[in-house]
Image (cartoon, rainbow, N blue to C red; front, side, top):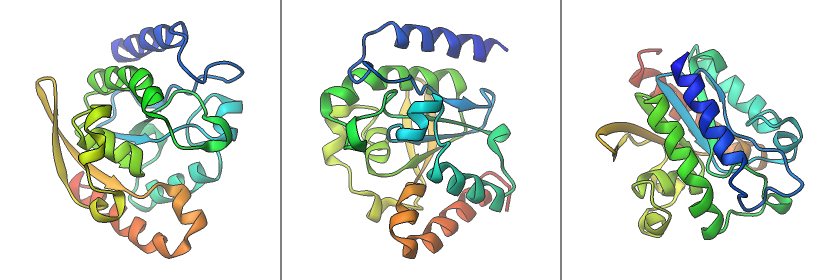
Length: 196
């Protein structure tokens, strides 16, 4: 239970930090199992997530649930959080300033959970994590199209993490041709964690 208590403390600090985008929105901090060996990192909350205060509860969340089930996982087996803790207006892309001010709390989440594998969902999450958890290094990282489904390693503090970039489940809703690639990437994750 110590990890959950530590996460609750980080959440309280984030709620009191006056982060950009806070006004008029609910914090979407994270959900799932704090003892998880797999952590998913998305981009930012959408409208439904903002309303409920939980990540991945809308249509992209339903897609994620199906993909998790395809390799024998559920929310009880993973932890999930986003780059941003509040919803950007009209789901626009996060700004550099927003990423700089929100991600220190995400980094704390990663350090507390200590997952074996980090799965980045979409471009911003992938660029941030593979950029060494640095907003300023994001621009040197290739896009998700080139990186998805490839096992990478990243160091944070004194730990090395396996990272698997993937398309965001929402991308499948707009471009169904990506579904097979996303399924294949999840199958790869299943092999990595011994669930295939």
